[in-house]
Image (cartoon, rainbow, N blue to C red; front, side, top):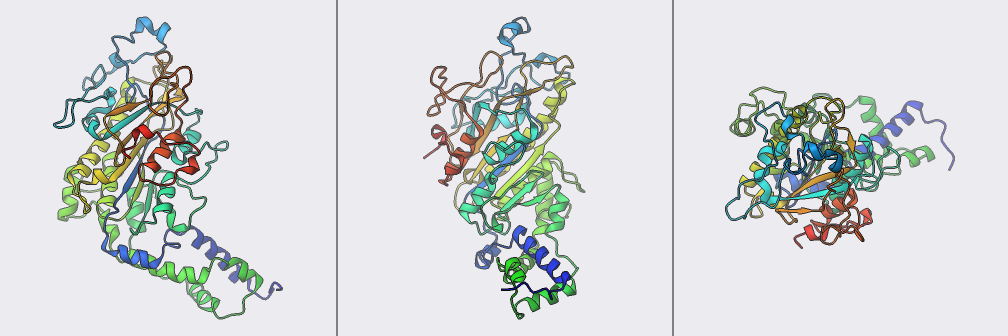
Length: 465
């Protein structure tokens, strides 16, 4: 077939733009029948939350604390670890690790937390902490993308799909917006557009995106779409329309119109004066008027998306300001505590809300809390901490065992610990490093999903099945 040189350049440009749009659209690959079934907004039976603390967190203040009576300044030349809890200028922080009070029916906590974990420590009954993770990088972008995908980046470039994309791609949820990525990168290298995350950088973006638009499509675009199905097919059109641009557009338009007419934007508009939004503001301590981009506001957004059956996966940058190479220990701890307290409120909410399938939402939600790497166990000359390979993460909720610690970091310089990956026990002779791919494999396996893309086995000691 010859290329038809008579196709107007404007139309060729339109075809290329439309092909790109349909490849990237959130709704373009979602079967309409599935979306129609989601109109009742039934919550997903299994939900996932990926919580990112950006900047590289201090594990001595978070999930890998040390006893300051053992790791003293006098022994720092030997241990290369300085907890620094006595350097807080804010008396509301403890000067030692937190061991939470025992919860009724849960037994005592097997997890000690750093002073910045604050209110979140009370939820030890739904937690597992993984320590001694070897990030193999000290670069912010690489560490972040490594944890998001479970695959070591190529240079700084992400490799593979986001874990949330993997989950949506495998489970094919019928919720209107399967995945939301708030301030977090998202990737899709092998699934249809329906697995893409709706990416926003602030709460208003989400409200605006879901609000009905008063503007119609350009008349020329409408006409070109109508003509697309009735004119002779040229090589140019065949190539650009190989994915069914015209039919995809019509299906996508109907789906998008149904989403926009469902009033989902109102669910995230916390400034409304309604019983539901007033209760949300009161629960999360939000102001009566926006913006709602605080850590607490972001936590409220996560709860809303899951509880109302709008999304199955939410990835969120909960708090930043952690790349503190200089300054006091208090500034880093304060930023951490802000995030952990907001996360604690989210867990309070999920625990207190019944799920239609039985139990509460926390019973149906798997949560991964991570940062791109950690901070050095020694304080530098400017009273801050630098980048450190050895990381920790927090796993919570469905499909996982709770109230346990897996792995360890060394007592000299908090080096990544070699462990028996089957048990998490220290094994200096034959042990292996825990890597981010082990965590991602564990998250996927917790929902009986295919984890072969990680090319490792999950940490089976953490799984309930």
